[in-house]
Image 1 (cartoon, rainbow, N blue to C red):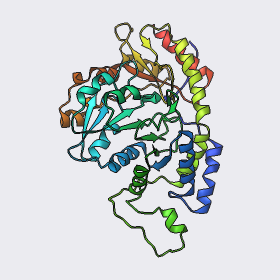
Image 2 (cartoon, rainbow, N blue to C red):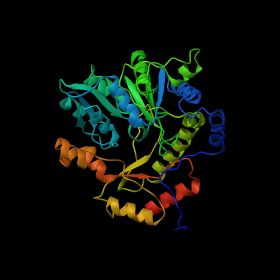
Image 3 (cartoon, rainbow, N blue to C red):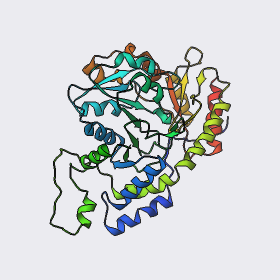
Image 4 (spheres, helix red, strand yellow):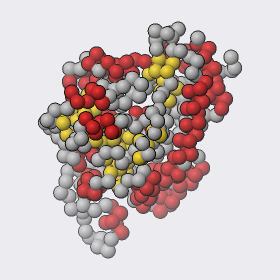
Length: 381
């Protein structure tokens, strides 16, 4: 074995360009949502072929804005995959509505259309389809089962991803993206809503700014400084800063380069790890483009020399960071207690919780890092 390296599970690739991009808002004094955010929104909408893009403080708040603009509330139900980051379900509770879990496929970790029909009731107002780890959910299969129910894309991991030639962010009524540092592009924290629905976009625009009828930029640049915005909606302060918008513009310009590089190394992993019988690499259906937010494998403990957790501990000792794919949300204490969920209620999500493992894949890694990860995994046996 070669010397021990230190390889993070994920690191954002930022540098001089992002640093310099912050100079203009810092020097101008316009730090809150303003011209840089507007430029980022315009570029993001163009890249994802959406009519509207509206920045927010996070993907969580972006999802919340969508549900709030749809006036989802008490008595309503929203379908949520049982295997996802907890925020996907939490935003439903923020609205006073009830999340209804649906199982996931073990091979994609995405919503299982076969389990969907049984979860729909007359109270179902929306389906949140999560594009987990950058792989788009099977939207056509979901729409076939529920043609009249709005689909909301949780595209937290899916900037730059596509489904059958169509960009993520335009596959449903609206979508929410994340720019957390573990995503392919970052603004530190931050999120974005995309939609082709003009009325929904207008309402979200107001809701993210306390419910104000006009933006701060419109008010400050207008000819009548004595005017204040009208407030007819109960809104939130979910505005992105112009510092984040400036960084986001630079990062967005690198998005396709980042994804292409990740695709190259994902292909390397698939070929190099194919001989490990207990490790299944992620499957990408034909016609999909994944953003490769993470490279999440599935372990067969019946064939492995150790349990998943023991393997993760071993890799950590060798300097390789790993993580479980994400949560089986129905197994978390809040949802066990609130909804009376049991692990076996959603066996696909339960197994993905127990047997998935993300290995390092990001744009700061070099060839020697990838070779070391492969070498270390193969040496396990």
